[in-house]
Image 1: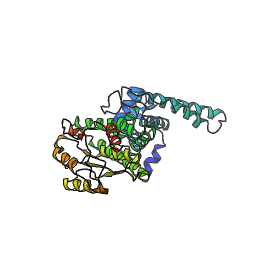
Image 2: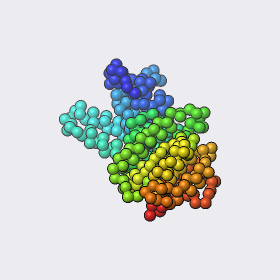
Image 3: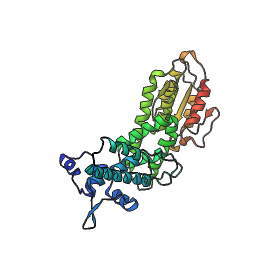
Image 4: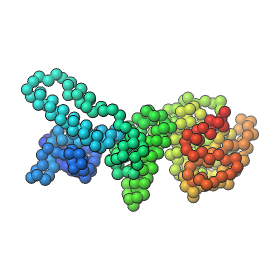
Amino acid sequence: MELSAHERGRATDPGVSTGFLARKVGVSPTTLRSWDRRYGLGPAVRTDGRHRRWSPEDVAMVEEMCRLTAEGMPPAEAAGAAKKVAALRRAVAASTATTSQPAGLESAERSSVTSPPPPKRGASRSGTGMPLGSNVRQECRGLARAAVRLNALAVQKQLTAAVLTHGLTTAWEEVMVPTLQAAGRKWESSGDRYIEIEHLLSWHISATLRGVYASSMGYRRDDISHVLLAGVPGETHTLPLEALSAVLAEKAVPVLMLGGAVPPEALMAAVSRVGPSAVVLWSQSRSTVNLPLASHVAARRSTARGSHRQNHVLLSGPGWDGCSEPGLLRPQHLTEALQMIATLEN
């Protein structure tokens, strides 16, 4: 949140209110009170013994707590590290009052305290209010915290780091998807509240996937047929297709991505013109499944590049669960779809 010049000036004064600090760091006053109660991460001064007044040192401690939790550290560990940093700052300030302190000591010491070993996977508490469960990567927790706070910059940093650290396939299956699913359960169980969290996540995940796709386009091969990706008529959810298109582009496989809700006539025209090595039809829900269309695509003979082969069709997405038709493939997840496509190409 952008603060006014007057508010920025107040931030440096001792004794800011809880409401002001909440606006400054991007969390709710309730969260600040919870951190104080659970972890002792509270202000040093309370007016009349009740009202919290946060000194500049208190503000810095809370900012450190926000930074660490946004990076995926569990709240209890982050609170402990933030308090250590605060204690170190006080010790450095006391020493500089009586001795000549070498320049750069505080920053060097702070780095050693705030750069703990990477958090272990599978901590039981998420600290986000999202039903993530216990058996998820630590990056899911950091991503969820950033999304709950509607911190777009932190969300994008978390996604970019996950792709760089684990690769796109693992980042999609073990970081993006579990967090998206938790966000969906969050608003479904709260009377359609918090839907903005899922929208924020979806937008940034889409931006990340398309960024990978765009950056990989220059390395694609032209000596093999395209893989055609399309959402069936009426299906507007395309994030899984975007993930598949990005991974295939990374592997230099030519992709023709038509997006969601492709009309049958347009789909058949594209199949005839391109002569794809595989056609992936995505259906998110049972209501959009169109098995006759899938069979028709598989039976269509392409004349592109002189080819007269039959099309290989992959039925992808949970909407196809329980559907079967001779000659149609049914991958269950991204990795299996990639394996099937690689086999068809070879």
